[in-house]
Length: 153
Image (cartoon, rainbow, N blue to C red; front, top):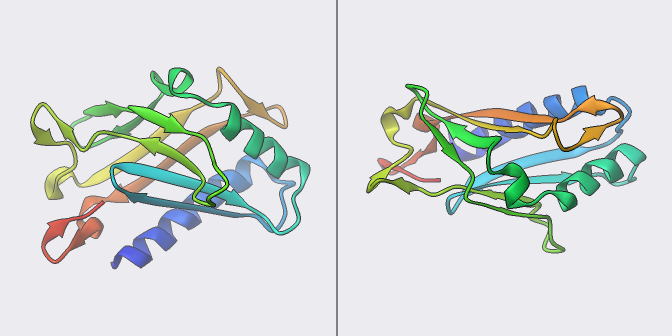
């Protein structure tokens, strides 16, 4: 699977999750990318609805302190890497940034042997949308993040 296909698959997974949380949100695109040690989430719609406004509001209110104990990457073996920094959406169109270190104790956290990498963020204690809990969860396959024999993310 190419990087583009992986991103498309991730986008579809995130869109499905957001649809479950925001059934009234119409014509919405939810995209996610990874690179430079960060996962970027973007929510956009041509005709903003209340649900989109609520989603954007949640992303703007978040901060690293709120996310530090409930937002992490999970790899095979159950090892978790908690977020190091959160950057709310800016006017650059790249969405919110969830930043994780690439190296832990001198070793890469994600390797080709990691198998599946799960991104998870539980916002239930801080925010609700349309009186529903907000949880972000998606998976990446390390083997699909390979380019020219090297892990690229």
